[in-house]
Length: 466
Ligand SMILES: Cc1ncc(COP(=O)(O)O)c(C=O)c1O
Image (tube, rainbow, N blue to C red; front, side):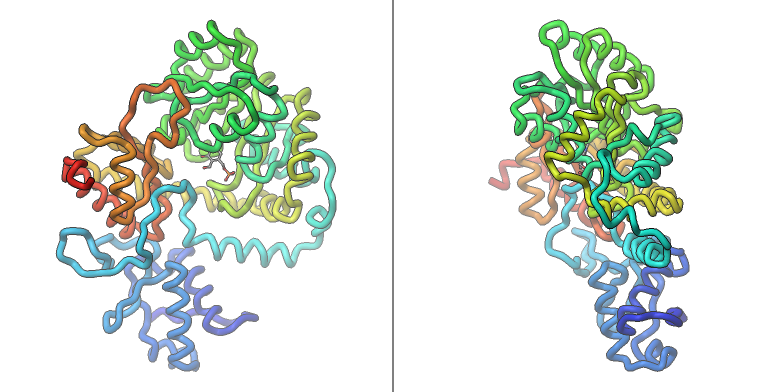
């Protein structure tokens, strides 16, 4: 029988039980499908009232750690045991069951959140014991506090050999990094290029800052070099923004040879590259090099901790040639003055202690398990994904249109994003939706949502619904 270890805690007992539960799930001591003790059993073991245990179980369920049904017991929703053991309804199967929320949101790319709380708590606990919070407390010099830039450079050096901390600029997340780099390094009415289907945050920054946007046609490996060259022969782009690994939305990973070709075109036609590598840590192949390393003198590398740790940690990093640094740091000052040093301190702690590597390994394993579920559910359909990508790209068969399918899915309680929301110009008419696999709190919920999407696809007649 599972009995939590509650030796030292300075919070209500029911919260201490929930925290212990979260930690034991994260450590693998409790596995998906494990049955927890009854209220009375645990109350006796801990010498507390059954009401306190009941409060703890209610809170655990609210946090997505457990699933309970009156009379059937409380079960762990962590990793491990086969899906079939979980009492969750599958459409059309005749099984009964409930989802915790009415809507299944598969529309936002984010890491799986259920096991993050214990990590964050341990980081906070360690920080509160540490001796120097100085860098977290005051105004900091251009680019960020040197210790925070050094932590970033040490981490980035696995992709950017010999990364120099003086070339790192902290931002308030990658979206802010896009805003800073595009507005500092291009001028009003300049032409900025991106993938023909691209992350909407890039489209909105380019338009919002009064630059012109053009999409470069893509194939399954990302931007097509010849198509880029053709545009450059007609116009003079100032910058190419490119997501070369686990591209959003198509999941494409650009091979090194093509990265080298794109870099050569940038040199030939003299434009900058903004290498948005926010999903770089999800690459399948260790030999993949960031696009920016093929033309470091004209490239700005961008990443953040939103996808690799958690979106609330609003810290991003730009890595830039030294000559561009003053423009970037001036733009950080005029937009946010400085990203919060307090948050940067937590981020640096996560990087310096190796917690980050541990968290990434966990996210990659979870993504791989979810991609396997998606492949299984969509066997007969054209679903594109990478072994570790958080999202997948579903090509819709005729007669489905992207908006029609996304609207129908929404009406049935599943949120996905239509291809039209990523349209930057330059692409053929595509019928597709982006499906994010990481947001459901557990794998059963994901399978439920995906199965629902397949059953909608199988109706094969969009007009029936309008
Ligand atoms: C390609 C890409 N770049 C940047 C961002 C923004 O990330 P952040 O949350 O760090 O601002 C996203 C978010 O989804 C993204 O997909």
